[in-house]
Amino acid sequence: MTHPKLVALVAAVLVAAAAHAQPATAAATPTTKAAVAAEFVEGEVRKVDREAGKITLRHGEIRNLDMPAMSMVFQVKDAAVLDRFKAGDKVRFKAIEESGKYFVTEIAASK
Image (cartoon, rainbow, N blue to C red; front, side, top):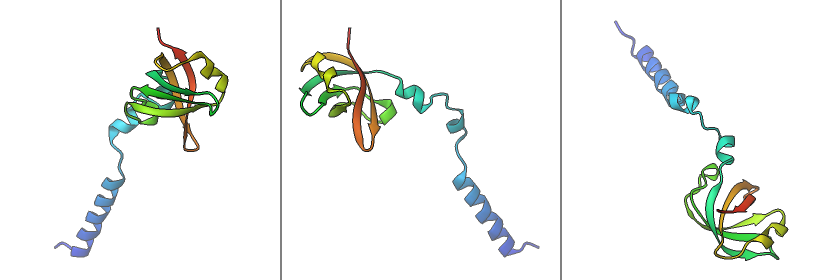
C-alpha cells in the first residue's frame, strides 16, 4: 500500500534536489575567469579623447567581460598612454569592468 502524502513528499524533494544540482561540466571547466582576463583582444582605434582619458575601440570578443565584438568607449587610468595612439591604429589590449565602467588596463600596437 502506498501513502499518497509520502509519495508527494519524495517527489517534491527529488524535484528540489534536481533544481539545485550543477552540471558536472561546470565544476570540471579548466578555464578560470583569471585565465580569460589575461588574454589580449585585437582591436582598432576609432577615436582618442585625451582630455577625457577615453579611447574608442572596435574590438573582437572580450571573453572575460562576456562581451561580443563591437565598437565602444573605454576609459584609461593613465591618460598619457593615449599619446601613443591615433584613429586607425591596430592594437591589442586587455579590459576590465570596475564599478560599472570599462577600462583598458594594457594596450599595445599590433604587429
